[in-house]
Length: 370
Ligand SMILES: [Mn+2]
Image (cartoon, rainbow, N blue to C red; front, top):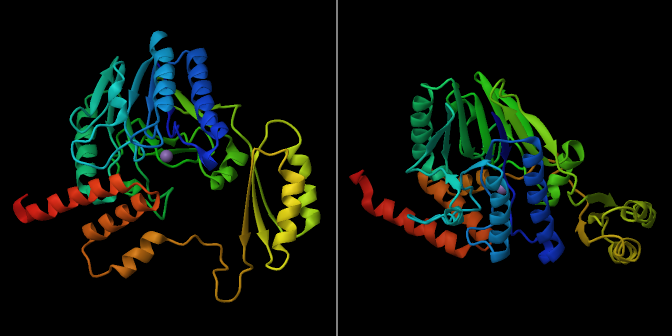
């Protein structure tokens, strides 16, 4: 039996508020569906972030539905879990996946299905504040999976090994007995081994943020397939991904040298970082003159030259750690709540933040009852 493992399609995402960028994510999704059909996939697993937000635009719902119907009409069974972008963090909230009749959506209430003797378990995304519940569910599923020769675990979580600044679980906390760990959340392509099985992130299907361009240059974008014979992941590459041209420049010549990259093929997103303070306006004007026409979008930012007082080691700032330091007096659970709240509000998800706060208050109010 042939499986497809896809994740992080982020349908409805509209980078730079451009219609073209919204279309790009639909195009990638449909190309993936085409490949699944032509490869003869029997079961398609989606490991979360089907949509970019818990209340997707109607267009995103329609494109998701079209893709799903194209799969199911060919007899492909579709199994999904909601990711952090798909879910309103509110008790009783329903993921948008619920509107699709022919999809098996794994939830905390219905966390597993069996397809031809293959056990498929899954847990929807849970934030770090719910780690205990997450581990409990994973443990329960691993217990059930033991009765099957072949088992798959779907999760949408960050693991410390791949997302060292923002993870919910350490990789070693996963039960080692699963044959294929079908993960979502990390947007780069990762095929690893764990316990006796394969542990994979297929990555996002389009470049969701410019900092994913490095992985795209190296590994492309796409999804994975695996067969129940050996469970070994094989990459399927998408050809339609919108290119990103990234450069750090400090002279007019360096900008002119980029012009070749925007002239041929599909209009790229150009992500330009201008170094040096004085000439910024001159360089910015030059960039517009040389690169605007050939690019879909010109994203120009100024970066200051590092001084002794700024970071020079190229290490990312760990916001979680900074917040942890600042809130050191609070319990771990409360610090986790503060960070989740910060992330939601950071992307203007006021409703999601409200849901988190309500939920947290409810748990706090119940105190030691449970
Ligand atoms: Mn994602």
